[in-house]
Image (cartoon, rainbow, N blue to C red; front, side, top):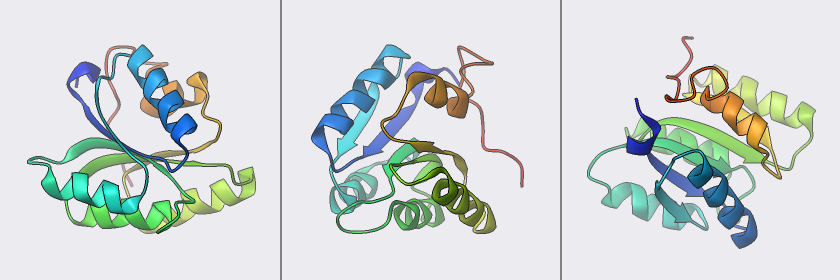
Length: 140
């Protein structure tokens, strides 16, 4: 699917990180972005959307819920198609979250360290291999 058509929900409680992520996504051609600062705002955006978001980028350590739990709720409700989890946790903790997402059969494209960097995001989205398309969820 061409990336300029993708609808992306961003959930990040730090305004600077949110703005930086928006800027990075814009530089890759993603413009249909819905920024939110917490799970409550994200759920409001999800509930008011007429169609599922193609992608959710979500911080793990939100003030009102854990990011992986929010991703699971949105996924099970058919509100998102894919997700990327963002966190400042250690690489071991990120690996554990990735394994948990796999166990829960969530459509997670990756668990990325914050601050987010371009090459990691490009890789998670498959842009390093297919510069004009975002990859689909991995097969279980």
